[in-house]
Image 1: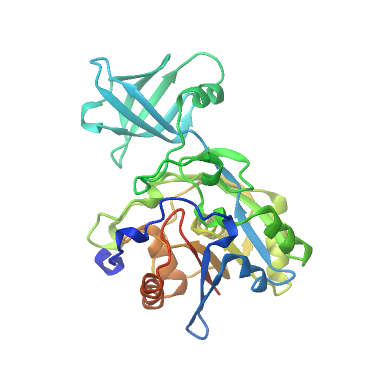
Image 2: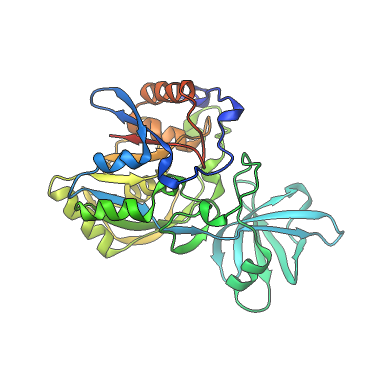
Length: 337
């Protein structure tokens, strides 16, 4: 399958630069797979589609201040993006300019010193950090929230790039489908008997990068840390056994549930997943999907196409463009039934 099949033209002005005034005032495009219909609504309408007994599975990760601006020994500027911790004080990172940061080179950020230990398979770096005090305090002092590169407008309130249920620090990017939920909306769903189930996947920026390989099957997915509690697994399994549906809030939740779905059951546990979902994949654990509109040729668009059918998804994207929906992280949402 050619990567170019997942390309589309998006007018630049449709890339959302700021969040909606109210989280749940975003627009919602509803795709019904059984009847091949596309309906327009508002995100707050979502309460009408999730029924008592259904499970709404959310990713409770929190974006950390993963962007560090530092200098090399020569004084040249360096930008470091923390992706995954891989040992005590050692992180997988993206570094710019990478060609000037070979193993053995150092980067200085305030009173922190990072030593490049090795290159990674995807062009990143392993960096071992030396610092004084608690790591969380150091990041708070020197780090910045890493907004995606297509967002050019400074964010006035950093909490708008966090979900209202963000609890577990560790992500370099937000699970953006969840940005639309408000405490009130979640409370409405709870009060009608919907199970709200948290899982964790720490989102790395590789998720959002375009696939460079000519053929989809050649792409190597990056690895991300996940955790599913016993309580979460039991709740989702109980929901499915009683004939109710599992709604995944975002592609990150899909990847977690499909990773731990074995023999028709969700199995609790934690670890790393590099599961790459594209058309042809057989879903085991997810019935409905809430998601944003994704970049051309991205693994996210491929996952959504696997879930709803590539042709149907690409038609829906053209419908969204025609009706001037807002795209990407701060954009509008899609519900796939």
